Amino acid sequence: MREMESSQAASPGEESNLIPALKPPVSSEDLKHRSVVEGEFWRKIPAYADVDTETFLDHNWQARNSITKPRKLLETLQDIAPADFYEDVAQGFARSPMSVRVSPYLMSLINWDDPYLDPLRIQFIPVASRLMADHPMLVLDSLAEQSDAPVPGLTHRYVDKALFLPLNTCPVYCRFCTRSYAIGPDTEQVEKASLRINMERWAQAFDYIRSRPEIEDIVVSGGDAYQLRPEQIESIGMTLLEMPNIRRLRFATKGIAIMPQKILTHPEWVEAIGRVVDKGRARSKEVVIHTHFNHPNEFTWISREATDKLMTRGIIVRNQSVMQRGVNDTVETMRLLVRRLGYFNVHPYYVYTHDMVKGVEDLRASIAQAVEVEKGVRGSTAGFNTPTFVCDAPGGGGKRDVHSYEIYDPATGVAVYTAPAVKPGAHFMYFDPIHTLPEDGQERWRDEAQHPLIINEALEKARDAAASMSSHRAR
Image 1: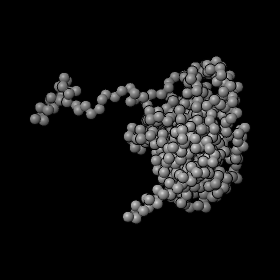
Image 2 (image 1 turned 90 degrees about the vertical axis):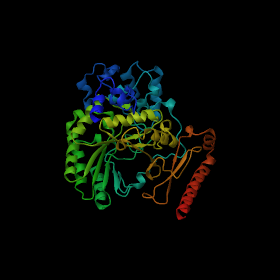
Image 3 (image 1 turned 60 degrees about the horizontal axis):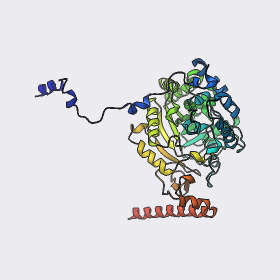
Image 4 (image 1 turned 135 degrees about the horizontal axis):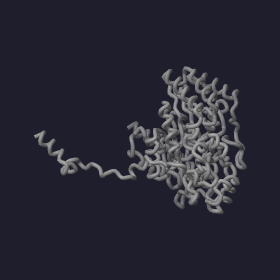
């Protein structure tokens, strides 16, 4: 019988009928995450029309030619963007809490036929016409990082982890930066806290880390680790690895997403990271890079070569995204981003709800939207390549699963979180953008006298929910 079945299975005409049709044939849409922009895509920008590949791959050329002023934007684009767009950008620059710096690489990936809706333009180039008033509950340092800083530039919030900020510059400035209180030069809107490179400040941070045996995990951020010289990368990494309490290091950089050229044309920087990785591995300690892709369009053949190079060097890369309105706040876009990251050996790690920072209310989405997108993403790829969606609770509560609120009122947009392992007994509130609320909720926020009532109502509901849960457990 088995021989007969085998013979039948081999019959060409019957093969398709004998294989169970568990799934329909794969479509090109299902494999879309494998394809990225190829060729000399930058030549469509007038200022880069004669730039060859070797020049475009030079990270120094990218840095020198980054856009920092409206005038340079106009010179670069000339007439390929709408005429009224340039004045809109000039006013946007003036009202932004962040300085603006956009690499030629990013400029080349923006759709200048429709810049207002382009997801990369939205993230990096402010336009005054789309700005909205900040939420009335917003503060400049929304995560209270400075409140948890025992020495300047070091935040110690979680028991076993500290955040080290050795510098205050980046290869590109994101409109939505949670550290707009310190990163980049002063703007017309914000006088920055000082986190410039300073060896004495670094030494204070290292002394504190040594003095706290519970600290095992250090994030080296900023600013951006891309801006550290190779010898500085190695000095920081080796100093921390020498400490017996340190088990894990993470170098945080957006650079791989917005200037991958550096991975390809600055081998000294890559090797500095590589040597720290090697030393960590020899001591059974983990050293990785955390990067920051927000949209599938940020990936190109240059990104692919950069992530391949890091992979072959044995350097693990993880990704942290921020969910943003008009950028990646749909299930379809986030699925594509997650799968593209995984395909190119970047582990999707976190997706944050947008922090409550100045000047970017147009970018924030609601807690309800984040929960909905998470539901749509989970199950679309392997679990280890599925990011956790979190709310970094304002006021210093730390990262909470976005759906783990004690209470959430979609009418007023208030979500109340607790953080028992971080700050027991405290409540932390995240506020949805007012423009996403139903009209009755918007009306209440328009009345300043209602603000304390809204907050007290939310806290009372959270306490009642906790008391009810405690009573249920007791039974």
